[in-house]
Length: 467
Image (cartoon, rainbow, N blue to C red; front, side):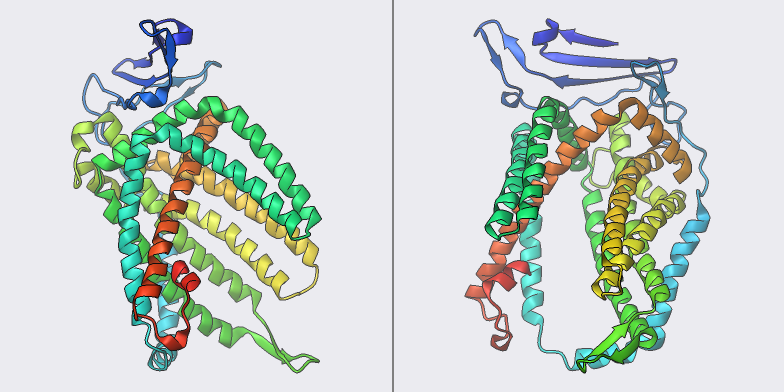
């Protein structure tokens, strides 16, 4: 049922109640209301955002109880219902593939890459200044990120509107720069894109209050369970270490498998072995996708527990954080690896097409079209996986079962979910850009005011800003 306090056009609070045999849940969101004492409407941004959690009547919701989220009914009469799955390892073969992948790369580095790495390090210049700058700017970025969360909590609707306008303006700037550079085709494409973004902004403007509630709820859940933040930073460190390890292995395999010839201009031209190159790309993207999706699945489990059982998810090291991380790394790890491998294969094919086009292997137009199509396909599958891993983190589904639930969800409530998610993503991107610019300003200050960088390196403000 849905109830509105006040008349439908001037409701102060809209409440939805979902009921099943053993479960009642509710949520509420503030919408603009009419104040009879002042005779004027007040915008939602003038009121503090309200976060309402679901409440189970029988027993607290967790992954071991029999109480399940209620059925969500849409106007067509169909239902989307998540159910707690029995505890067992899902899709274990794909977890084994990941372990084999990491082991193979480590074996290559151990067998061939140690000497070359030591020689490179012994002959390298002093990079301690770059390390200091990275540590300082990284520390400032953490502070700026925390401030960004506070700003998003204080004025979420304003930020969502600002980020949406920012995207529209940037599309217009792109068109203007293209015409200024004399690229007529890119300018025309930019104008079309700008007009489409204007239509999109107008169409979704009424959805901003709903996206605001989603954003505030998500930030509140993360702040209540801030233990997932160190986990995220740890995963970033793991991803960085994997990139270094893979790079050493890549260079060794490239050197041993590529075929080099001298062209008519006297330059050496090397053609890679595309079979090995494809496997290397799959290896790299596979592991990186697993790292990203593990923290995403963990966060989904934590937020789900916070929503239905707040007493289990109300502190930094709450049981929800530990249990969700444990599930993501054990019983659900195979499902995470399954979806990650699908995306990795598509990304590897896209990168292979890009490499072939860059090497001018012929059929450049066909390769460009293939790269574009693969890029679109990868984006679609990544977005699909983001929702599938929510089912994995909340209920313990296998990847295929989670995918079926996502298809049903999109069939019933697809546009509502996609639009709200896109608006929130735009906001997070806008805040990330602001944090990056502020951190870059700190880097420029370090380059100008310190002697950390070797004068022979000729480091200017632009390089420091990038660092």
